[in-house]
Image (cartoon, rainbow, N blue to C red; front, side, top):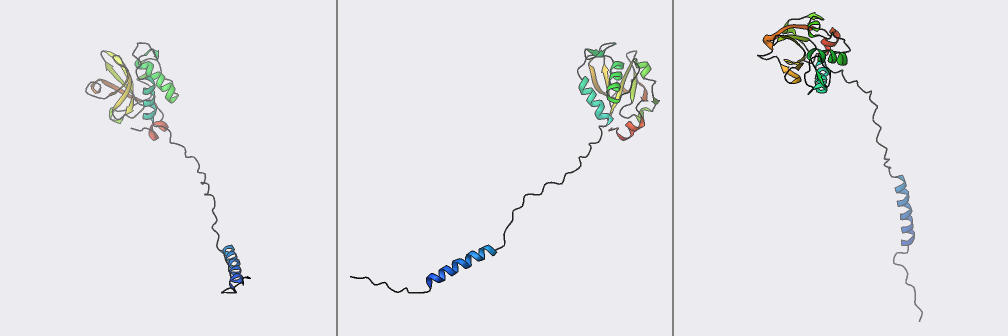
Length: 183
């Protein structure tokens, strides 16, 4: 027996499907394209120079470097340092300023200022236990010195030190102290 092919229900189906497929392919080709671009590279910013450290910051860094060094009369190194030796070293290393070796000679350097006008970097000269003692103002009512009992330290201008204060000398140039006092 011979099978008869049945006519397609929709004789135009095959050409229609072919035409529809071509149309879809053409339509897809015309669709707007999304272009992914790489992220823009950041605009190179000029590195801003950090402001120079304040006089207080420089002095406190010196303190950190010398903290724990014991007091030794005539000492000028990490095995032991006296008050004038510490001032000589700190001013040389921090400010490239050469001070005399003794506290008495250091206490008359620069310009005398009233105690109420003290600012970081000013030398403070005391009469303590019958002898000369010198330190440097670090700001906020404190000064760096080499204490005969505890070595290199930062002390307050308290009831002990304030009455012993005899002189305040400004030895740093105004260009350093005015802009960078950091008090």
